[in-house]
Image 1 (cartoon, rainbow, N blue to C red):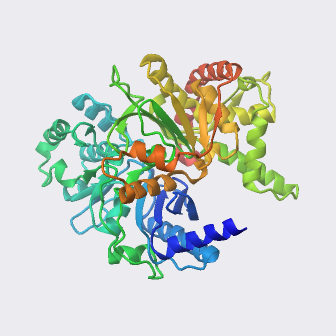
Image 2: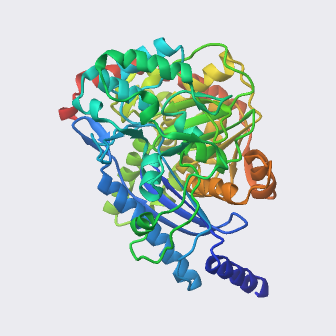
Image 3: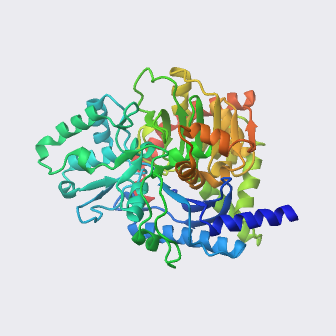
Length: 542
């Protein structure tokens, strides 16, 4: 009891003296604020649920959505601090902001957003992606900011000539709160290719882009409208008086807080899983799913399925990014929740997920010849510009609840496996450790075991996995604040954050690996069914 009281008093002193660190991340379905102490342990959490909207065939969130979500998540976190410790939150030692990577947010010289925010989920930039990839000799994914910009150029969109600044969601929030137009290098590498040696945008590719747009007569050059690139540990600015008032509506929060460079959810995921060193990797599985593997050598060939980005320090990373993961799965669980309500059974949704996920482990290794495609939106790895979630079975398939749930868990990782097979089997990339984080891994063992089967590799989940990217950006802010001279981010994480923290490792089961391989062969074979669904079921019919 005495030890608990001492720890509480220590936390109260940390709060009063402004030695805490705040991280806020804008995920696809949740905005989360995490306040940590000097041992990098969360003190308080606040979250705000939100959802993208399909407007005029564009997946988007409004600036008002962003403002409300930011303020609500911060307010709930601050209220949790006061409720638990009786201390109003007025001083913070450092903070950082992160968000969904990529996307398109162009602003004019007065700071007005020129078109609605186009998120990573949009897949209408195929022509720009193809042309830029050919021109650069470097894979430019459809969701990257530069692909969205060039597609707008090709479309002749009127707003392009008025662009004064182009950024991402994380970059916008950072700019709003600090006045600084900067990005962390990991996030910047999802806007435009970077030179890992120079820790900046690739100058030759910048020149090529300007050559491609030279005849348009725009008043800007690409260098002039992109954010400045910073690496982990550098200072990204300070919270301004206006920024503090915008973040905390009560006016209690004092300005002047140092802010680390804004990062994307890929960079924060690497940080939150101690996966910034060579031959380490992580998989983030939520609304989207992506793997990040830190490379020890360049890839042998250009692969449309694999993106090349960086760690928050600027080291090269192979990324397999899939637009679709748990959205379809979540809807099925919601259907079962409705059925339970009809029976008069009040079920906690988290408990329902756990029950169904655990039941999936009882299913056949190959899912009993059931098949699902979880495409809510397009999927570039398999060549889809739009998606139609579907479930298919044969009359003699083993249609059990366990097989049904296992099928949807497999489908959630199906496209990821297509990309990772290229990385592991064709490029022979060595991976010493994979760490999973995100909503798919909240139920102990289930998602972890399925991922281990998909990658045929051991998968670890840390005790901090539930805090996700918000904790990751808080760690990057803490590194900026507390790093020693010459101390790398990798060393800081291993020695000062993760030393002694628990992780649970799940080894791949050979029977499950074989079953997933059989499933993925059928999955590839059923993609023409998905194509037919996209072609036959138009947007107004769905």
